[in-house]
Amino acid sequence: MNQLVDDYKLKDKLSEQKLSVFWNTKMGAMFPKYTTRFFVNKKTVFINISSASLRQELTMQKEGLIARCNEELGEEFIERIVIR
Image (tube, rainbow, N blue to C red; front, side, top):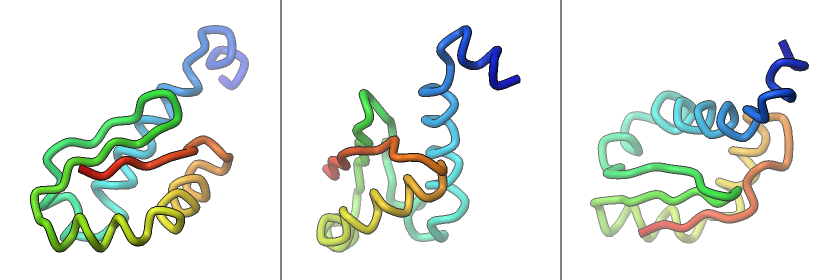
C-alpha cells in the first residue's frame, strides 16, 4: 500500500485529508462549529474562523497547533498555520 501511495505521489493528499478529519473530530466541538473553511496548501494550513475570540485564541496557540497536527500525522508535514 505504501509503495502505491509513493508511486502515485499521494502522500501529501492523504496527509491533508487526515488533517481535515483531525480538525473536525478530535479538536473538540467548538472548533468545527466556527470553522468556515479549512484547507492545506504546500504544507501550510489555512483556517477561516467566524468567531473573533476563537480566532485570537488560535492565533496565540499556532506553535502548539502545528505540533499537534504533526503529531497526529506522525511526521513533520505542517510548517505554518494561517488563521483568518
